[in-house]
Amino acid sequence: MKKQTKFRYLFIVILLPFLLLGQRQQTIELATLYKKGKLKSVNREIKIVSSDSGAYLKILESKKEGILWLAARDFKNGTIEIEMRGKDVFQRSFIGIAFHGVDDIHYDALYCRPFNFFAKDSVRRIHAVQYISHPDFTWEKLRNEKNAVFEKEIINPPNPNDWFRMKLVIDKTNVKAYINNTTLPSLIVEKLSNPNPGKIGLFTADSSGGDFKVIKINYKK
Image 1 (cartoon, rainbow, N blue to C red):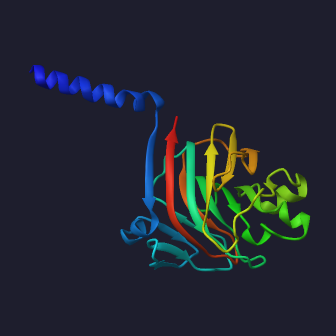
Image 2: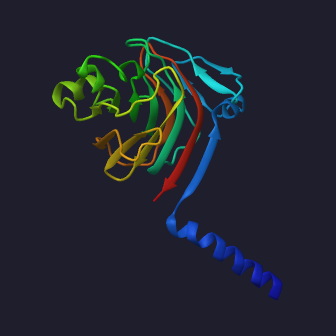
Image 3: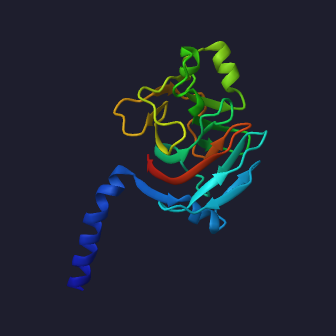
């Protein structure tokens, strides 16, 4: 009995910091998850591509917006980090993360336009990273009514044709987007939806595909 008591006490001591912080973490190989049938595709065809650095998902282009939903439905606050790749082709690369998803119509998303990363036109450059909240707040509505508030330029942007990471820090009221290893966020916005728990997905806008490799999710209260 004494050994069991000591073991239980040790288990509680180890677990207690995580319980107090209210955190749990996941690192997900997306190709593996797709093979297991754990991803739900909306308006997109998916392929698994093998490479020297590991398998990844290739989401094929379509004229409609597309989402690849993960099985998790309870994300509210925390961080989401995705490793992804687009391309430097005008109006053909919109890639990012959907979150707080209720269904295929109601969700928030934050995404990049790689073809604007190094645009010579300064107006295009401030459209490099974008927040939306569907169906009420589309990119077009936000640009027309609050220009340059919900989309910004990326300082020291990555190669638009290469892999890069985007990390979202999401709390009760705000979303911050960090690109690669930057210490300052490229975008800080006030959320336009209620901060209810919801689904997480891979987002690609109309006429766009994209490559996605690993997603890391850190849940917080």
